[in-house]
Amino acid sequence: MQFVFWQNMISIHQSALIKALAREHGVLLAVQTDFEGERESSGWTVPDMGNARILISPDARTVKETLHAHPAAVHVFSGISTYPMVYAAFKQAVRRGLKTMVYAEPYRRQGWRGLLRSVKYRFLRLRYGKKIAALLATGRLGVECYRRAGFPADSVFEWGYFTESAASAAGAETPAMAPP
Image (tube, rainbow, N blue to C red; front, side, top):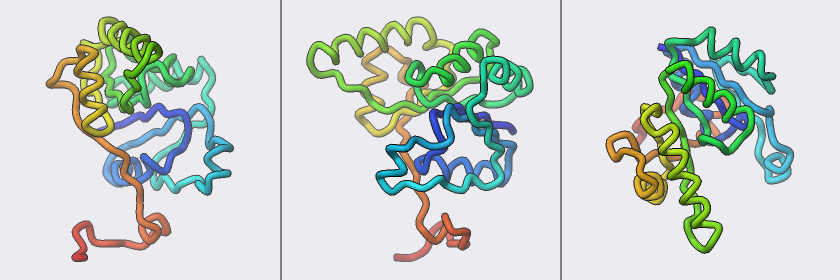
């Protein structure tokens, strides 16, 4: 099986998942930028993505070629309309009828801005909801947000961020279920 992840940057939050998938499957990570400076100043470092191939800052032509080259892959997008390159790839994938999944954080629903966000996500659900195979929402609040926006309950799943321990990030093999 092949997976193509479309993200804003190489992230510590997806490194464990992508690295594990890439041990058994073909994985391509397409990122808008390699790493955001604000993350580096917060102490983040660029994570090792294992056997995953990485495509950095693809232009519109490269995005189109990448989608064309991976018609049977599962395309996993970081948000629907959050990052310009990711959104452009998402819209093309949907038009082509490719298998799409979206990884999304909850949005704030409070206040007048929250009302606007709720309208935005209802619109996105109307436009794309039936074309998204699964929406992986971070936490229970994420599930609640997207179900309230009308995304089908059977396609919204609670998900999360999975970071690596320092030992596994450094390449040490650790048992999956080590005793405490």
